[in-house]
Amino acid sequence: MKIRVAVVYALPHSQTIVELELQQGATVADALTASRLKEILPGNSFAGFRIGVWGALVLPHTKLRDRDRVEIYRELVADPKQARRQRARGQRAPRMRR
Image 1 (tube, rainbow, N blue to C red):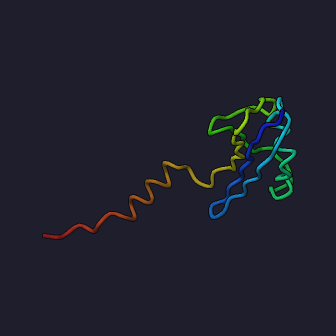
Image 2: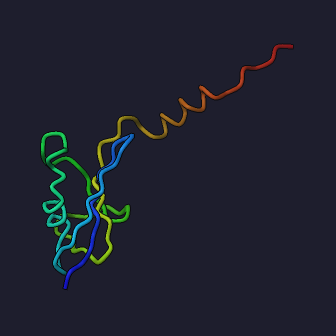
Image 3: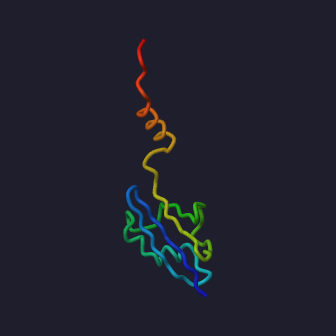
């Protein structure tokens, strides 16, 4: 029996989604290999990237289920809290003088 999964890698302005059909019992590592996405990754390797299924971090030996979404997480460029503070500072209206 086969299962269908998607492997996703997103950049700030684009994303790559590879739809795969794998044998039941396939692992996250199997899906990553079959996706051939490492060819477009920096260093051509999944080393250093975190991997998740539907937003939850997983290990490479995690077995997949039909319709799972395997996500490759890149390093954050900035701390999300710090970036939010900077955006908020830039959006404040100037104070009126009395």
